[in-house]
Every structure is written in structure tokens, then in C-alpha cells.
Length: 305
Image (cartoon, rainbow, N blue to C red; front, top):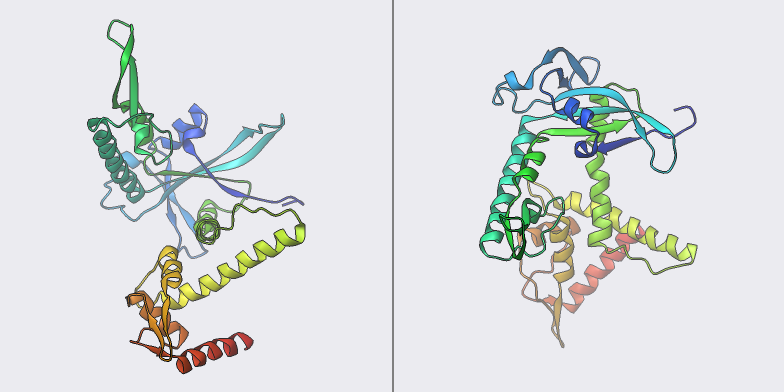
């Protein structure tokens, strides 16, 4: 747009100014999102009041509202004008409520076991629902800390159940922005695999060529993994990166002099799928040295092709 980059980012509704939080969570003025409109994704002309709807009738529906806002940039005095798009889903609301109930139960268990200690503030840490009281009823400083559920924190979080915020400077219609943002998880998943499963960080390198080579290696490994995962995850099966990479790392063999190799790993659905995608098997009682050489030769020939 006019020589500058455009953006679509997730906006935490909890970090908005008070009047914007009120606007984002009010029940009236919502439009139904239709991703299969005649001319592409579109909004309904009719407005809905979320408080008047039966969640069962709209369990799979997505609602949306939007407005332009101005945000002050922290490092400059300039203001950034952007669109705030807020969506609401009853299914997402129920999911957040279910997750929080489990976390509250864990927080209660922590309190009962007397191991609250220093309570955390992490986004998904159940200890964020625990508060410590340091004073007695007459206002004096208590020698022993007393822990209890932080109902104020629970109520504050529950206020945003089902709501999701997006900010952008694009002028496409809101459903199209929502659709594009829906693909963000793919990018984030690739970053997570690279950083966590491939241990791409920390990087103790200084020369530019070595840094480039390191991340090129990580990128190529990611491509190979995605290709392998696509071949392995068939017939309704889905294996996580941890399962696939961990299984490959554990597929070891015991060398028997004059005989061959005995697999030391356990045969599973995943190893069956890995063998099926590779076109050979190594999970027999013993793999002869001649067969292992053929397998290695076939993989080398595949690499050359």
C-alpha cells in the first residue's frame, strides 16, 4: 500500500483501552460471517444481539464487528491508524470456559496441597488464579501468607470468552481479513518446530555466512520434515512433530557380527507408516548386511534423482 508494508496482527483485547474493551465485548451490533458468499467471504446485512441468540443454533457460526482506531506508538509521538476487527464464536467461548475450569480446579488443588508458593503470572499458568493475602483482619502484617482463589482475575478473563481481536491497515472486507489470518497458525507452527524440535536456537555464530548456512540447514530440514509428515499422516492418522522426530531418533539397531542388524525399536503404526512412505522395511527380526546395503544404496539413488 503506497510503498509501505501492510500487516495483519492479533490484538489482545485485554490490552485495549477501557472504552474499546467495552465496545469489543458488547452484545449488540454483530454481523454473521459467510465464507461461502457468491462473491467470496461476506458479512450479513442483518445485525445480531449475542445475548438474544441460542448458542445451540449458532454453535458453528462466527460473528464480526469492526471499527478504525488510533494507537500511539511507544517509541515515537506518532499515531498508527488501523482497523480493529473483533470476532465472536460460541464454540470458542465454550472452549475457553472449559479450559479455565480445568485450570481453576488445578489452582484449588495447589492451594489445598499447600504448595502455592510464589504464584505465577503466565498466560496459561493456573497459579495466576491464586492470590496471596499478607494482612490479618485488623490490618496488621501477617506472619503467614494465606492463599485463595483470585475471583477478580477469573471474572476479568471470563469477560473476553469467545472474543478474538485482529488489527490491520488493509481495506479488504473483514471476512477476507479473517480468512487470511486463519492461515497464521501454519507459519507459527513452522517457527515452533524449527525452534523447539530442531533446536535452531540459541545460535553461537558470528560470521554472516555461517549464520546463513545454519538457518538454511534448518529451513531445508523443515521442508524435508513437512514432506515426510504429509506422506506419513494418511488414512485419518495424525502424528505430531514430537512423535515423528522422536520415533526416527529412536529407530536404532544392534549390530551382530556376521549376521546383520537387529532393530531395537518397537513396531508401531507410526513406524509402519514411515516404512510405507520410504518403500522399505527394517522392522524384521534381523536385517542382513546385504539388505542394509541395498537400502542405503536406494536412498542415495533417490537423493541423486
